[in-house]
Image (cartoon, rainbow, N blue to C red; front, side, top):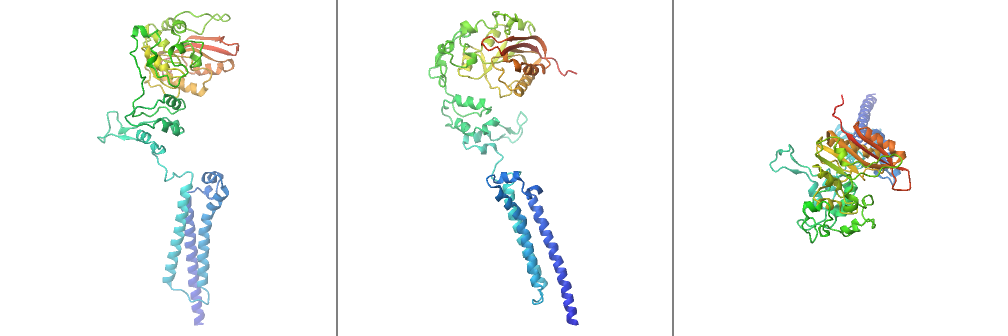
Length: 469
């Protein structure tokens, strides 16, 4: 009987040991789930398609088995330990001492935790929502060319305090599409510091047009024409073709201004094939009354004097966002109005031509916010640029940016905007959304082609004072 009592006590002891083991196993299992859940959400433990495709899109079955095996390995380890403890408590084996049990339990838990840690590290490495340790937050680390890396890196102030602009450093920026054009941008920034830059203006313009705008600055000297000659005096330069030696002609079909002025060649930008013909084509524009449309007895071409008469003496400065050689700015200068001409070099040296005439060019794409402060300009004029090719959402952004820089009472002159008849109402809604006062509003057929599906729209609109209420 005493022996049986001893066995009963031993059995009670082992029942409590088993209970303790089950509790520890459950805790280990919960720890494993909690640890893995820091890397995977619960749905990720079930292995969603999105996770599998992110980790290894070529083999989603393998990713599923690896993810589900994390918990299975832990459960198997716990079951194995329980079975071994049962063997230790069999009748043939003497009961182990408490010290042996504690050492065994410690080793068991350490093994479980090590296994959980290794699995969780692997999960963190591939989880789509976890930032990869090898990736850097620094934009410059995306590029290999050292000049780009130096340019985009934040430059802290040397005095380690805010500068007069209220910033602790200088944050030089590039356009977001530069990251998608890594090869082209690295080619553009591949030069020797302090030497002459490559003749790569077309590459630079390609980057700008495709959204890599603004471009990074460079630490090389821009190429200039080899035989640059002094520009003509201002009283001659306005209506005279510039000296051919003052332009770098690489990348153009025409290699001189005479070629560009000859409208039979049709070389250069097709919307402005006659822009370099200053005497016959450009000189009469906005001054000489145009021919009226025979059907509507109206014209889309307004004259500068009649537009300025809307606001006598109030139009002083403005922007011409068009494709051209600066003739609008030249004519406005005769009325003591200063105009900045924004354009890029579409197949011809438009910016050089504007500057050589003694006017101010602004090398700017449609992608960029205007570099003017709010409510500062008296006039914005546009022609031959924003036409039926433009996306409606983009047009909204452009018009609201123009509204930003126009002062209250300023004029928006839409000059010969053309589009298909079926698109006209949608485009007109974009202009109407500004809620400007209509001084002029004309729609006439576009008759330069046999196709009668296109129309011209011209308007002069006045920005109201805001807020409306």
